[in-house]
Length: 251
Ligand code: PEP
Image (cartoon, rainbow, N blue to C red; front, side, top):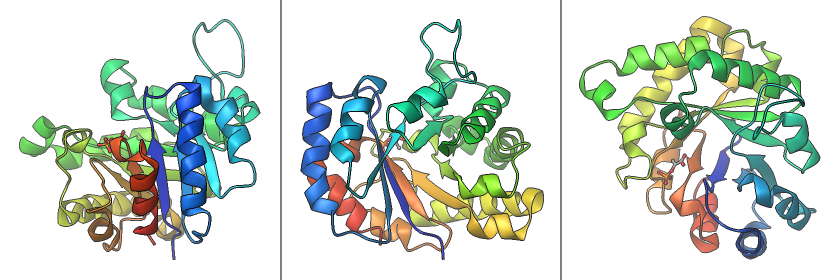
């Protein structure tokens, strides 16, 4: 049985004070929730303050990105070691916005993934096809490429600390959610790829989150599918009430 993982990706939203207000409102709303891994991913500048606010709570802290070196002349970048120092246990890698706006390739994302894992962070590794790729029948090819190149070189143990987030790009921030059937089809396909490449034990244990306009009113039907193990939530993670409801409905 895979433990559900529900993560809020706040993207480039909220100042430090607003971030603190959000987690301070969220904490009491989920404090009795057991059996779900809950993660929030604020902007870099709020991580340290939010880490302090989360001490003693059942909410874990994640970053939205990281770099492939520990330190050095890499202006503007942040290392996994720095994220851990700020209180993170998780990072997102390969979000479609990083792929789209910052041209992050599968190979570069694989380097990031391996470095973050080797540095002791847990990773939510994002994959997913665009609308054009889906409509032209290339969805499976895209997922094969992203999984094969993106997860290359991982060990069986690495999958204890790696979750795959299937996020169809056409569903992110659009209000259009994949139907539970579409999500299940993609998740089953991805789990099959993991089985082919890493074996049965890895395929059984790896968590696959769905992301793309997840809301309190659609999360339960997504979570009812056998291969959906959680969610990565953008817009609906920015309000404490809604995110808490979404977490509760993920049990
Ligand atoms: C995301 O940011 O990963 C995401 C899925 O966004 P939204 O929930 O707003 O579609």
